[in-house]
Length: 204
Image 1 (cartoon, one colour):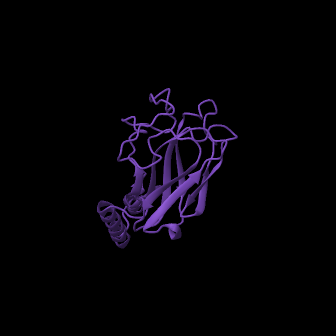
Image 2 (cartoon, rainbow, N blue to C red):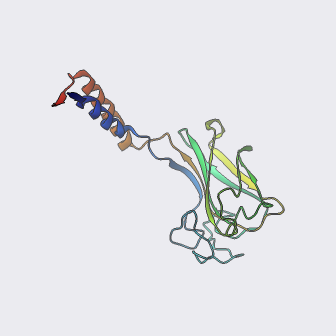
Image 3 (cartoon, rainbow, N blue to C red):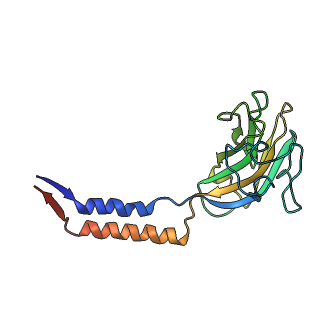
């Protein structure tokens, strides 16, 4: 005869309500409009072949920050990103063509003057690196995040052209009110289950 504890199984199920919230965007430079082409695009898409982009073309509008939605050559790039409350910060950089070949990178990425990572061609299709859409993500130490921040990098003088859709600062530690309610409800339910006498189901 075996016994299955329903209270433990129920507690584990309720604990699933307490899963961490997804990272929220704190601030963004750019407008995530698929490099000014409109619509949506995803990592792995080919900027010219799949999305219809034309090299050496500026798709930006007056509302777009410098260096976004326009095909750039090598040189220093920087974005201003506002800070905010929270922790677990990271930076997303959505680009195409920036890691084109072994002699064009890696490029150091800095947040407020401190290197947080590098742009490199690892995992990029070598035949399409000049146009492949890639999402680079970099962790940012909480202590580096201020009210006003500068994200920057500089391609080497061997760099080819590339285009940037957006750069975004994210935080994973500020759940929405609904998430807080679920977390508190989940903990209360677990506490209640632990106080009740365990119910068992017996199988012959």
